[in-house]
Length: 288
Image (cartoon, rainbow, N blue to C red; front, side, top):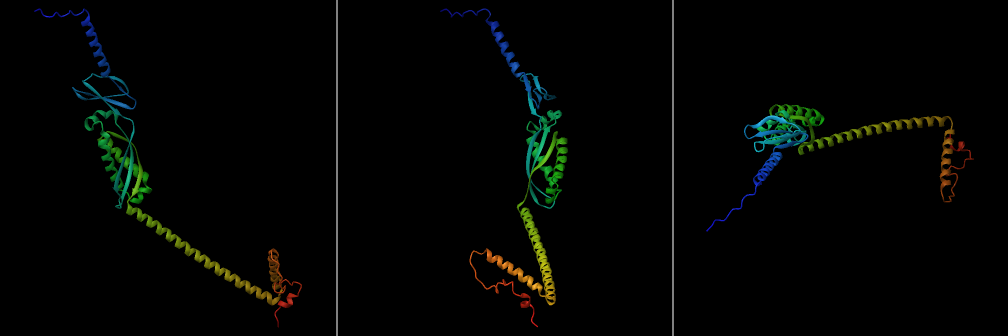
């Protein structure tokens, strides 16, 4: 029995396979041997042979050796970090405080940051040092000073946090701001009670001042009426014309009121002081 005959390989097929393999290798090298660093980013190369490289690469397209090199991209733009903590003041009051911190890594120290703390360095480092620095700063002020000296507290936290983060962890702190400040329930109630007591004291003081002014006004009015009565008595002893003048004023007022009334009224002119033609001087003069 004869073995099956293998058909001959066409000429040029080996060359075609080589070309295809070469093209595939070139495509693999082109895709995996280049990486891009966007704006606001830096790159550090990890080598399977030597570990984390010392050079920091900036924006642009760079070449690396596939499998041997692995680029790690870092965001070096300024980013915010919010931290909330309950701290004790100098006068032993508990305050709920929230702080916003603007930070970024020191670009020249990115290889060391990656080696020591990893790519999530901010989540590992910032919460602990922000809380520690914040508690230490809050403990130097009274509860009332946290409101009146808020900017000073922020500057103190910024200075201490900037020194600690930059010296030990290579993180640059650009700004620190207090975004929320709340006091405990007992302290808040004490402040409200104090305000109510101050308002009540001011109200009592106002009432006392008003009573004194009313008393003074009544004394002045009584003195004026007494002086007026004395002057009227002296004038009547000399001449009864003052009573005639008052009688004319009363008659004028009564006539005005009667004229404005819609009803018809018939009254004695003697009782209404309207008999102005009589000799009132003799009528009103004191009898001897």
